[in-house]
Image (cartoon, rainbow over all chains, first blue to last red; front, side):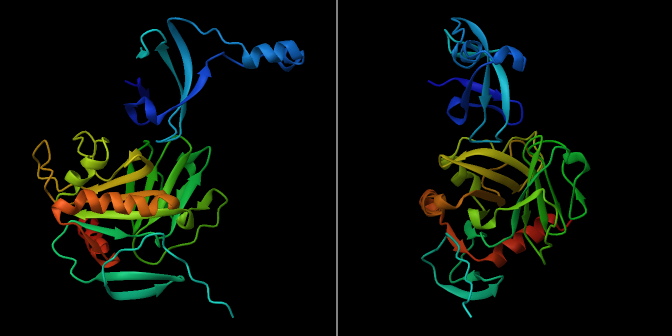
Length: 81
Length: 221
C-alpha cells in the first residue's frame, strides 16, 4: 500500500502520483562553503536517512506539477502533520 | 504549393455525415447515429495554450483575469481559463473565432495534446470506471479543474457541468460535460479505454456541434 500525500493544490492523493525529491536540507549553503569539493559532495549526496519523521520534498508529477514539502514518518511510511 | 494538413490523433469508427475544413484541420461536425448519449467527441483541433508567469494576478488572458485559486476555472466569450498552480494556467478556446495571443507567456499546446469531451448522461458512471478522482465533490462548483490520472494517464480534466439538481450527492446519471486533455501519444489508448468503459451505457462518437450545443446550454446564463 502506497503512502497518501497531501498536495497543497490538489489535496490528498495516492503516492503513485508523486515524485520523491529527497530530504529537505534547508537553504543552500554559501557558494564559498560549497567551493570545497568535499563540502559539495556532502551537500549533494549525504542524507540523514532518519528512522522516524523527516521533512521531504515531493512533486505532484501526475497532477499540478507543484513542488512542496511534507513530513513523513519513514518507519510507518505515512504523512504526519 | 504543398497543402498543410493538421491531423488529429483521434479517429472513430463511426461514419461522419458533416465535416468542415478549418485552420488546416478536417473537423467532424456530426457523426451518423449519434444517439441520445453519452457521447465522446474529439476536440483536439480547438486552440489551446499554456500560460506561465511569475505574477499571474496581473496577467490578462484575452481581457479576462486568470482565476486566483488553483483548480478553479472561468468560461468567458468561448474561452475556458483553468488555473493550474501558482504560476501556470491553461487556456482552451472552445467556441467562436479564436484570438491569437502575442505575449511571450503563452505556449501553443494544441498540436502536442489530445483534447476530448465526454458529454451526456451517465458520464460520471463511465469516469468512475477509469479514475478515482472525485468529480462529484459538492464543495467544488462547476466549472472546475482536476489534475491527475485518468485511465492511468496524467490529464487536465475540467468538469463543466454535472447536471446539478440542488440535491446532494448529485445524481450520477444526470447529464453532464467533462473536458479532458492529455499528451497526444495517449490518444488511441485513451479513446479505446473510454469507449470500452462506456459500452454498457451506449456511448457513441459525436461531432463538434454536439459539444458546442452542450457548452452553449451550460454557459448561456
